[in-house]
Image (cartoon, rainbow, N blue to C red; front, side):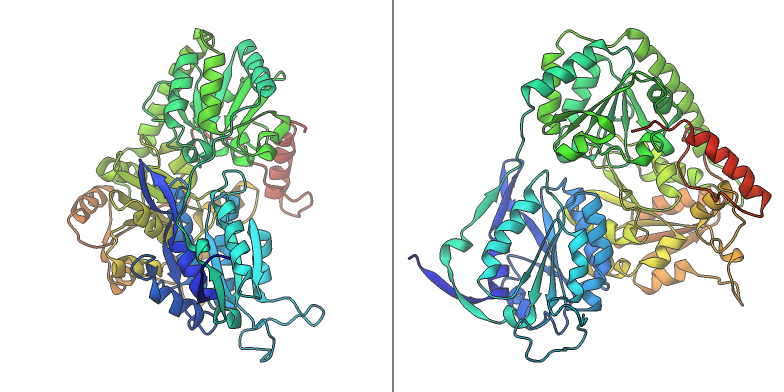
Length: 616
């Protein structure tokens, strides 16, 4: 038997994590960028002491909110294209449960994060302990069982030696391109402090590399045959293109074969949108150019996307009766969605194999000509939407125009999440470099923005990280603004104040609903809130200013470049204006019965639109 080292279970976790490596640009680096920790009675003695011992090799970061720190970890993984990731540890009870929302974000978006919540006593001697959830029908249940449906792998460590197999399994999931997602190891607090003689070999350095499975020959031949017959093909590029680092291969494939490219929210920035065949966003928040080509497409090559409802216009975007879908995806279930012809492979290797097999073949020249015409029309509409204005309350699009003119570009990461901004940004933001557009829209999680900006900045300190956030999301989660100041990680945050949930108010109106409980003026209140976002941000240490026009906004952004810390710029916006051009119907069920005529009319329009949905 080999040599052993006596450590507590928590110490074993810390020593193991610091020894996991990866290779980026030919350099071997730690795969964990650090550990986020908010300590409590369920982890301060065990994990706290263990992390202190390795603090120079595996840095520990303190946040102000457990959900916020977990969002930062998710964003770190996304900005790192899943090559590196972070861990998060909390106490039991509310501290652990605060991370559940972020675990959902990571699960839906297939992003690696290691959650290490404290848990109850495995020996059960002091039960019930402070913050313990009791299930009178199941003695094994704790609050951490809530992580099960939002974890790719879940384990509860009740003996110190169990951590060895659990950590090995965790690393397999965190680095696997198919199973990739959040891992939860619930650490019983007494077991964290228990010692075991661990084999020294368990703590040897290990390098994890990106697995790239090649396509099956029969699936490849089938895809090639379908494409060769196509008259109006289109490529839909998803986040898998970025995670596979296949952006060059995507560009080369599109240009070699004359096929237009549209992008999902996760796939935006996978291709330089200044290129002639790059038509921008698709679907519900799509450009008129992408959607015009997609409507008539006879072959859709979906690369690294699960084709959710925003991408497919609730499966009503594609009008060609002879449509064939090719699912080029590393995950079999995603490759099969919408009855697609599967091509299960890594995006980079799959595109290379497809292009080689299609050598000499190009789509009809008329397709590229149509794409050029449609893109010209769209670019004119987008420029008009983003043009500067003297309006008292500018639109989101006009704010986007100001931000892109003053701080956009290849060295900027634009970050956003839920609400109305994602739709406008998906259409309008000029993404040119891989990773320059960072949108959390798989889970559409309000509150991700500022914490996510912090995580993105930690992953890419060389970039200017610009966070665009509405007042509703800002109010839900803003505490990590103070953390960014504390860590010396500068963000530029533009707060668009439309005094409520403007996006959902518009959706409410669009489905026939009365203005109710979304904008602050339409909610139950005794006093209308007058929230001073500038003063609030300043109180947390940021440099903050409120502007009253687009011209002032551009001046403030330019001035913020000289600030040495996080800068917050607040501007009032119109809650009702949105870019009319582009877009597509989205299936949001309208009540079948209502006493209100507006709802009845909306229901009739809904039924007519739903008739265009494809079956299957």
